[in-house]
Image (cartoon, rainbow, N blue to C red; front, side):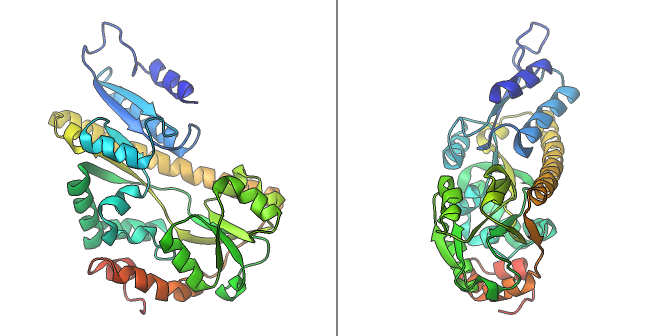
Length: 326
């Protein structure tokens, strides 16, 4: 997998040491926890291509995928120390450095990417970035969209009332457990590798994740319905080591930032295409798609959302939810 991506970059001249290439190209390690083949590696490849198109031989882009240099927290530490350069990272940086501004992690706060993007431009979103940059030694460049998280179920789910007694598999994130419990689900923690078996044996009635989860796990064999709740928009974020970034020339910084923007847009579009593919494929395998009115779910979740946000910084709730009733 990674060998294939490295081979692709080599054909572009990104990894060559031929004499005609700049003697000391700028090395850029790009880290991500996902394996090759998704929107993440596509974005890394586009990043490398763009830099090579604009400045042949100037940059040596080296992808480290599938957590090959460590998980998200390990990479954040390496970035802080200046021992790696760039990462397409998940939500750990928000929780580690600025949890009091991290409304993005709370289910049913944002159900569209426009809402997430608007929050990141709000005073709370800008405070999140500023604090994370100061605390973590990061340089933030923006979001790359991922597939929204939805539900799968063994029965039709249209309203919160349909979740009464429904055993929903969730990861061990306290905020997620609290919100779904408030809505009415009976939350169950099952390790990810055991999701299929838990559904097959009736230990759980459904789970939530992006559409890649039911597709790659063949959950159509044990689940009948896709419930399109879009309850979490959990983005990737492009961040760099400030120690490394501040040592670059202004022209190189400008070109790298431009390449990151191009890569983010490319990766987001690739993710949208993959999400459409998964949805169509799951329907072809026999799963029924239900598109519920999400507003009642958010309304049912509000007491838990308000409890969570009571511990966040002033203004977060208003920037995230606007005038919605508390």
